[in-house]
Image (cartoon, rainbow, N blue to C red):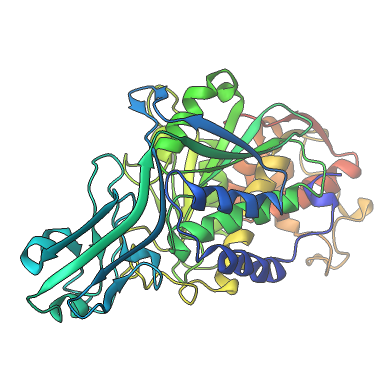
Amino acid sequence: MTVAETAQPDPEALGREMHALATELYPLCRSITGAGLRETLRAIQNRIPLSVREVPSGTQVFDWTVPNEWNIRDAWIKNARGEKVVDFARHNLHVVNYSAPVRAKMSLAELKPHLFSLPDQPDLIPYRTSYYKESWGFCLAHHDLERLSDEEYEVCVDSTLAPGRMTLGECFLPGKASDEVLISAHSCHPSLANDNLSGIALAVALAQTLGRQTNRLSYRFLFLPGTIGSITWLALNEPIVPNIRHGLVLTCVGDSGQATYKKSRRGDALIDRAMQQVLETSGAAHRVMDFYPYGYDERQYCSPGFNLPVGVFMRSQHGTFPEYHTSADNLGFIQPEFLADSFRRVWGALEILEHNASYRNLSPMCEPRLGKRGLYGGTGGQRAGAFDEMALLWVLNLSDGEHDLLSIAERAGMPFGKIRAAASALEKAGLLASTSTALGG
C-alpha cells in the first residue's frame, strides 16, 4: 500500500502527541555533545527505530573537528549571603552552553563580563553558546542583572569539557526505490520549544506515520547537533549522498506564524515545487523564500560540493520573532494546533513526492466523451461528490508524456490531490496510460 491507499493520518491527534513529546524533552539540557543529547535520542528511540552513532572527539570532518564532549551537573552564582541569584537548576538557559568548569570568588566588576542579558527584553533569559572557544558565562534576565549589588560573589560551573564523543541519530525507512527523502532536525538546543523541539517532534510524527505503510521512496531521518552534526554526517556518508533526491530541514514549526518555506540552493527542485504548490493551494497565508546561505543545516546540505535539493519548512522564521533564543520560547509558545498544521503541510508535499508521475492521453484527438464513462454529470455541471471536471480536462489536455502531475497542478492552480484523483479516474476509464514515475530531484 502507498500513501493514498492507507488510512490518512489524523493531524489533530498527532499535534497532541507532538506537543507531549516536546513536553517530555523540554527539561533536558541538550548541547552538541553530552548526556542531554543522548537522553533526547533515547526518547526518540522509544518511538521510532533510531540508530545511534558515536563519533570521537578530534575526528576530522572536512574543515572541521569534532569537539570535546561537554556535560554539566550544576551551576550557580551566590551572593555574599549565600543566596543563589542565578541557578542552573531553575532554568538551563542560565548557563552559557558549553561553559568550561569554574569555581571562584570575584567582585561584581570581575563577574560582569561573564553575564549576558537582553536590555530590550528585560524579563527574559537569553540563550548563548561557546562551542568552539573555551570560556564560561551565565545568562539572566536584565532586571535581575540590574539588581545585583556591588559585593563579592561565589561562582560555580560544575561541568566537564574533555575528549569524548558526539552522538548522531538516524532512522532509515527503506521504500520500493532507492531514491531517498532526507528529513533533518537539529537536536542540540536546551529548553527551547519552537527552535528545536518542534522540529524534532514533527520529524518523529512523520517517521511514525511513514513507518506504518509501504512507501515508494525511502526516507532517512536525521537528528543531529546543528552545523557540526550535519557536517560530520555528510563526511561519514559520502557514498550514499547521491541517493538523496529530495530533502527538508524542519525547525520552528510549532508557533502561530504563517507557514514558510525556504527553497533549496537549486531553487527549482521537485521538493521546492511540491512545498510551494501545497502552500499556494492551502488557502492560508504563507511565505516562500529563495535560498540564502545562512540559517540551519540546509547550509551544509546545499553547500556547492553537495548541492542537495534540501529546503527548510518552518512557521515564524528564525530570528524574526521576539521569543527566539530566549526563555519565552517555552511550551506555551508552541501549540498542538500549529504542530498539526505543520504536519499537514509537510505530509502534503510528501504525497506529491510519492505519487508524482506522467501520463499519456490515449484519446488525444479532441476531447473524449466523459459522460459515457461515468466521469461527467448528465446536466453538464460538476458531478457532486465525484471528480472535479476542470481537473479531468486539465489532465487530459496536458497528459502528453512530458508533463507530470505536479506541473499540471501548477498550470491549473489546483491542489495536487485533485489532479491525482482525476488522473486515477481517467486511467481506470482507459483514457490514460502511465509513462513514468517522476523520481527526480
